[in-house]
Image (cartoon, rainbow, N blue to C red; front, side, top):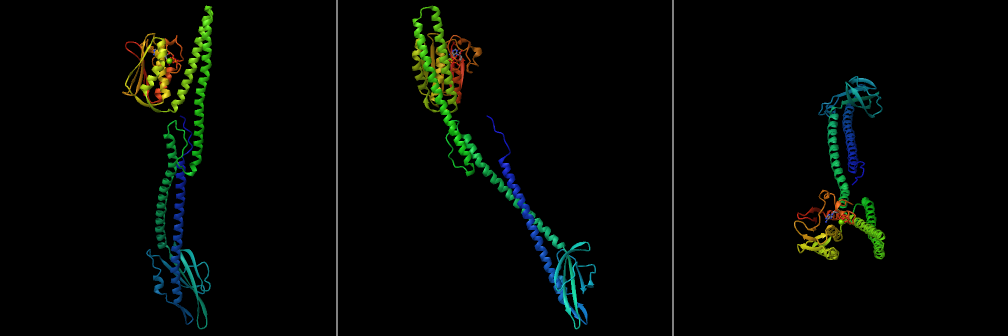
Length: 454
Ligand SMILES: Nc1ncnc2c1ncn2[C@@H]1O[C@H](COP(=O)(O)OP(=O)(O)OP(=O)(O)O)[C@@H](O)[C@H]1O
Ligand SMILES: [Mg+2]
């Protein structure tokens, strides 16, 4: 059977999309957590710097026209960090450096009590700077004191590294979970398709009934078109079966009529050469009638073999009926036709096919046996249900025996008999359709034996 072209895999496509989505979400999660952590940590440092600079400014006072500033110990101790971050400070009076680090500058000048933050660099390290100012009023002057405070960010970046690691782990965990979920979701989705496929596969070839099991909504159109296809197939199959039966009838009936006219004419013709012509005509009619019959039978068998109609039958009964029906024909040739074997051989098979096969075997035995021969039909249950037809004729031509069951193949011994070479083909196909086989053999004392085992 042809398998369809394959373009990609739905499972991979689905899994890739879901896992790709999960990866993007995991990255987003990582960056969102990290940037939020940066904000919170920076805010924390800023708050401490602000508290520290405010307490320093609070300690500033003006005495005798000079600024006096005792930096409170607490202002520095609150800036202590686990990473021993360094702290720099500068005190300016009206914009003029007063004490602390001279190289600690702030880009903007202090403006009336405002707090300002700035990121900068100090002694080769990144620092967070804060600047605050306060106006001091003395006895006869007012002056502006500004404090700039800077702190390195080692502790902060350590915390951030730690948070980044945790966020990365969180992202990875999320990704793993999402990947597992997408595999599960993919299998569950594809599983539905698999179920439908296996229920189509499990059906016997004769089962063309529609699918009624519920399927997911997305698959319903597929099942609907599958059902309609099977409906059409069923219809066209039964139409061909009717056609074969009709054709057989229409071909055989007029041929039989022509034959009887020819026979009748033959009786009335006296001239020998005319009689010879009439005889040839009758033979040709017999041949075409046989060929048409066998061809149509073969077509019917090919058709039915695809969808066997099995029923409980007794092979002995089948054989007996055929023997009874064919005895008159055997009698005309003085042949004895006998049945022997087991009394009952129950079997579940297609009656029409088995009848057809066995009739062809008995037909051969009668056709190829010399007059007054004995034909035996034996039915046995063991080792497998089987029907054997044996005659006492010349037997099969030994060099051709392998090929005789092929279509239209006739043996060298069949030159003077009417036939189309389909009888054994039919018998073989019937046996094979039932899972059985046909066996051709010659008997020791002479004669052919054909065994159909099911
Ligand atoms: N009982 C038999 N004894 C000897 N030869 C046989 C016997 N049965 C079949 N054969 C040989 O096998 C050949 C094939 O048989 P098969 O029944 O398929 O075709 P057929 O009898 O020639 O034609 P038909 O289709 O009309 O039956 C025959 O032509 C004949 O040579
Ligand atoms: Mg035959």
